[in-house]
Amino acid sequence: MKIAIYCGSSFGKDDSFKNEAINIVSFLKSKNDSIVYGGSESGIMGVISNHALSLDMEVIGVITNKLASLERENKHLHNIIKVETIRERKEIMLLKSDAFLVLPGGLGTLDEIFEVLTLIQVGDINKPCAFFNLNGYYDKLKEFLYSCVENGFIQKRFVDMILFDDQISNIHSHFTNYKKVKAKWD
Image (tube, helix red, strand yellow):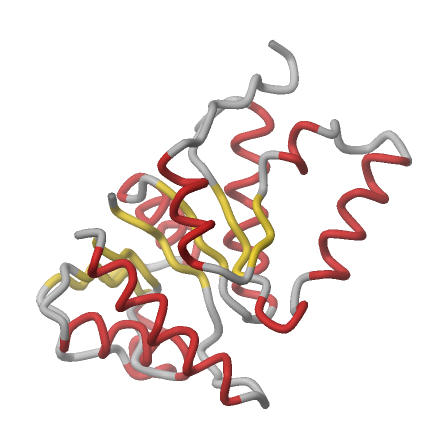
């Protein structure tokens, strides 16, 4: 399975983010999965790509020309795709991935996964998504999404389809056993 990993180009303030990223990559290696990610060697993105490369995993990096110079493209990648815009980057990652895993990150991370979730809702794609909820990092986001359901702005099935969990084995099982969700207007 090709798993897109969305995560920060920073390390965050807690070393457990970095340590769990390493554990996640090791687990994915044990399942013979490959990784699609944003192409940087900075922050958690760099931890993921460098550890995956050290395990001889397939890693596909997708980065804009501008970010390649600003965030320091990971020059060790055998498969790097350079594009002009973030929009192109997201499209390629979307097409090349079978599932989407969100680790702690910021605005870019949220932008990437929310586009995926929107495309699932309107029926353009139907692939599994999960938030690695280390130390409750995404608890308030999950609470907000269910608030959107309660207020009539998101149909419940589109939040229920997202797994929030801090165990990569549970997330992988969710990816493997994913049941497609009916689009909003179906």
